[in-house]
Image (cartoon, rainbow, N blue to C red; front, side, top):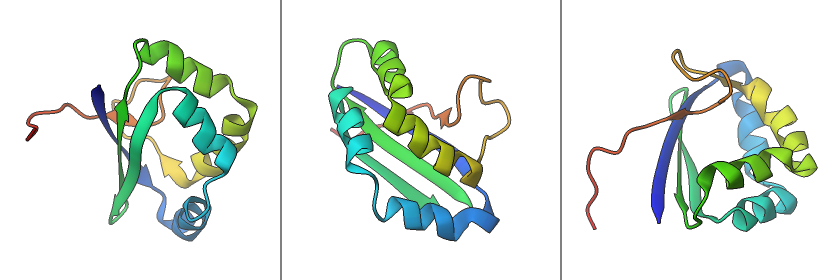
Amino acid sequence: MKRIAQTIRLRPEHRDEYLRLHAAVWPTVEDALRAANIRNYSIHLLGDTLFGYYEYHGTDHAADLATIAADPQTQAWWALTAPCQERLPGTPEERQWTDLQEVWHLD
């Protein structure tokens, strides 16, 4: 199992929309995440900063992420959520969220 932590900025003017969307995430989007071996996914908010965490239980993270990205329902979901977010400086061009380095874990 691999732990993944990520962050991104929430655009303040889209805060209500983002929270409304995540109060009822589409079941098809959740199914795509589960099919891609993602478990224990949560998103947290502090001010205008979103922090996401999930556990990856597969063997090819990049391939599973590509499967999620190819899913039409996930693409439609991202079309709604992407305008609510602002990539952080230094985020690779092909990514939306910035990966965080794990520095400590209590097992």
